[in-house]
Image 1 (cartoon, rainbow, N blue to C red):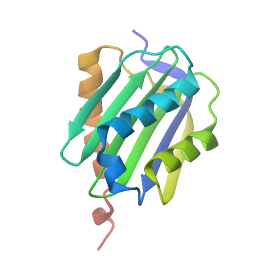
Image 2 (cartoon, rainbow, N blue to C red; image 1 turned 60 degrees about the vertical axis):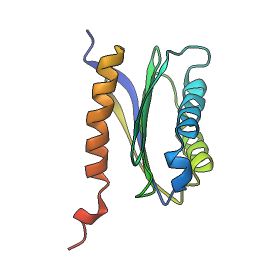
Image 3 (tube, rainbow, N blue to C red; image 1 turned 180 degrees about the vertical axis):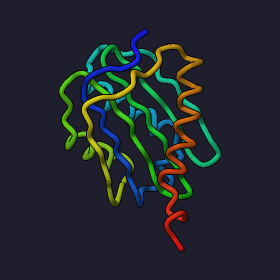
Length: 146
């Protein structure tokens, strides 16, 4: 099994987003699938999703890409973890995300290598659950208030 994939790894954090849109599973999944279709048109597997009391986590795994989206309604934040061996238009991804979730502010990070996302549904669910906890901690602004 391949452990590392080489390509673009793009992390987007969105703040001051619309809480209603972040909590709506249909909007979250549609947004993720729209981004996936832009990366690899016609080449997709099923979307895996986990609804939570405060938002949604979902992932789409493609042949040469993966996307994971975590939303947190009460904090009005979201995070997208995207990896692709294809060329990606980071500006287009930010614009689509901003439009869909009415995001007020973005932070992003682009690197050139990432771990490969699992393809097995149980492994995807496990990874989504763990990544959600990491994102919630990473974006916890109360840790900065002293």
